[in-house]
Structure formats: C-alpha cells, structure tokens
Amino acid sequence: MIIPVIVSGGVGSRLWPASRQSHPKPFLPVENGKSLLLNTYIRAASLDGITDIVTITAHDSSFKTVAEYEKYAAPGVTDHLLLEPMGRDTAAATAAATVYVAKNFGRKAVILFLAADHLIRDTAGFNKAVAAAEAFAGRGRVVTFGIEPDRPETGYGYLEVEGDNVVRFVEKPDAETAKNYLEAGNFLWNSGMFCFPAGAMLDAMEAHCPKVLQAARTAVEKGARQEIAPHTTETVLDAAAFAGAPKISIDYAVMEKIANLSVVRANIGWSDVGNWSSLSESYTPDNEGNTTIGDAALVGSRNCFVSAQGRLVSLVGVEDLAVVDTRDATLVVNKARSQDVKALFEMLKDKGHESHASFPTGYRPWGSYTILDEGAGYKVKRIEVKPGGCLSLQSHKHRSEHWTVVQGVAHVVNGEEQLVLNPNESTYIACGNVHRMENRGEEPMTLIEVQTGSYLGEDDIVRYEDIYGRS
Image 1 (cartoon, rainbow, N blue to C red):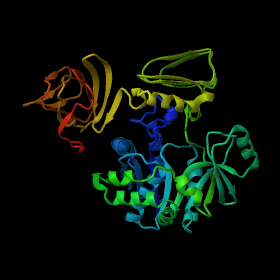
Image 2 (image 1 turned 180 degrees about the vertical axis):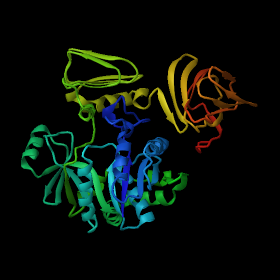
Image 3 (image 1 turned 135 degrees about the vertical axis):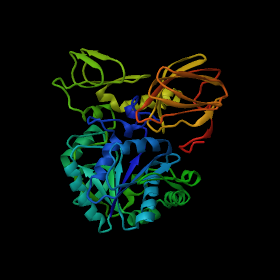
Image 4 (image 1 turned 45 degrees about the vertical axis):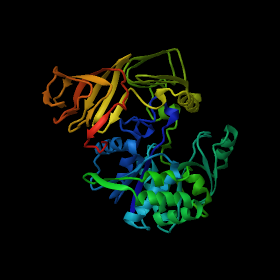
C-alpha cells in the first residue's frame, strides 16, 4: 500500500506579491491554469492503486485546499486533511503525517512524501521514479529523489551520491562549486521528495528527533477528527502538543543522519518554482522570449515575464525583467536577482506592511471578498458567495452595512426580518443588528457592501451561528 502525503505550507516569499501568508505559493496557478497544489494532487491520485491521500496544511488553508481538490474529484480516493494550528517546519509535518498513516494504515504502509509547490512536467518519468522508490521502500529503506542537474544551479541543495546511496547532503553552493558538481556527475539536486515505510521513518525519528516525534504523536492522538464531506476527513492537530515540536527541517532532523539512505535518480522535468525566474520558465515564451499572463503589451522587449492582475501592464525597450502587478502592489525585478525578492518580503514584514500578509481579496469557506475602496470611516467591498455558501449569523459593534445585490439571489437575515433580495435590491443593516446572508442558488451570488463606522477591521465580528464551525 502506498499513501501519498502532500505537504502544503510555506509562504513562498520569493514569489511576492502574488504569494502571501493568507494565500501561499501552493495556490498559485501555472501554465495549465491549475494551481501547484492541484497539479501535485492529480499526479498523486493518478498513480496506480491509490485509495487514500493525506494532505498536511495550515488550519486556515483547509477550505481552500478542499475547494482545489473538488475541481478534480479523484474517483475512489479518500482525502485526509491534517491541519496544523501553527507552522513548525517540515520535520514536525512529516512526523504528524507518518504517525497518522501508521495509525490508520499500519507501519508497513509506504509513504510517498510530496511537496505541494513543485512543478513536474514529465508524468511518465515521475511514475517510473515512484515505482523505483517503492521497490526500495518495500525492502525497508528510506528513499530520496535526486534530480539530474542540467545546469550549475546555485538555488538548490545537492546530494552527493554513490550508486544508489546518498553519501552526503550539500547546502546551496556558489557558482564555481555548482559548476564543479555538474562536471563531477555524482551530484544531484535535492528535490525534497521522499519515499519510506511508515515504520522505518518512525524508528528513525525516535533515534534522531524524539522530541519532534513525541509532540507530533500527541498532537495526532489528541486531535479532533470529523468527516467534512463524502470521502473527506479532517483532523485538527492538538495545538498545545504541536507547539512543543522543535522547529527544524526534515533534512536536518532525520535525512542527513540516516545510514544507507537510498536515492532514485529522477529526470522528470522538475522545478521547485522558487522564484519569478523559475516560474517564468514553466510557461511557453513567444519568439522574443517573453511570457505574459493577463493584460500586457510589450514593445521592443526581450526575455521578460509579466503577470498582470486586473489592469494593463506595458513594457517598452527592456530586457530580463519580471513584472508582477496585483491590485495593491507591483514588483519589478531583474530575473537574475529573483532570489532577492525574499529580502524585500522580509523588509515589508519587519515594517508591518500589510501587503506581506494579505491581499485586498480575502478567501473564506463561503467564497471571497475584495476591498474596492476605503477611507476614513468607510469601506466598500465586493462579496462573492459560492452556491450553498452561507455567512455566519453575526453582528458588529462599530459599523453599519448596506448590501446591494448585483448577481444571483441573496437570502438575508436582518434583525427580525428575513428577506429575499434580487439584483438591484438592497438592505441596510444597522450597527448591532444580527444578520446573515446565504446563497441557496446554483450560481455564484455577488453583492456590494458599503461599511461605515468608527472601526472597520475584520475582527469586529461577533458570531452566533456558523455552518463552518467558526462561532
């Protein structure tokens, strides 16, 4: 039995401003229009004999993850979500997932450990590599996937290998060292993908990082499990226990310490899509080497990447740039300096700039909202409620709201009134009134909300009832 485990976390700070804490890298789309996460899920679900897939992700990303998976609806597959109350790095995530798999499927179950934010172009090559790794794991071995390098890359860690065994892990090298590694022929890129029997990993963690394992084991045992949809279960890891896990990567905690670690050489069109330069390479360029997403116009420009979200972006007479325009932020970076976007992200974070954490668009279990305009004492939002979506029954202490429906039909509770609002109909919600909106139709429902008051923060909510368990 092979159980894919998808680890979906990490902000992806080098892909700011498209990737942020509230909408991290795994949810970014690639050339086929699907997110990195969904592409990973489809690869896993398409392997022979897969009946269960485990995804470990942040608690706040659970509804977005479910929404992504619903776009594919893998036949015969049960999804298991493990929700982290806080990030504790990949060792704790690996431990929690391994404990969960061993508990539900046995110590002999083989885990295929996949990162949600990797791009793999050669599906047939991936399947072949997984089969080779599964054969090693069937003999009780822990296996890593090493990527055959095609250039002296300084942005990846390396594995020094000898035959089917890993000799050592190597940190990201400088350019000269990376060139020497490529010429030597026995160095592979460290993909961060693994395959192992659950029992073998538990034994290795007991030997090398027992505090991580114990915290993860308790977090799983005390976790709250429920079925949230047909063939979908959700386990919220116990926060107090999980917080006790030391924050360390799986490489440092375990992989670098395992004797006789096996390696599968994989030539699978792999990229970790770590920055705008590598993401641009995942798209098919035009004759001038340019790639554009959205509304863009380029004149006399070469080897540029443009991502325009909502307005026209134009370039004239420039080369080797990545330009990313979102509703509230614009990035212009030389592709050769794409790694340095992380420093910009950290600077914004240190200054407390809101753009490091969130977008004007916020995602919720019922749909999304987008801030269209705001100023002293007012805020204007577009709210989109998916079919079957229902906002919580709530009130506000500091603001009133005016709702106008522009698409679909809204079923509204406003104080003592129960209303049905069609397009171009509205209602005023006085400060303190208990209220709720619901979309009972089969199409998305859209309304414009105008807020006025002394405080307009998202935390000015008192919830009384909520179908998503947030009250």
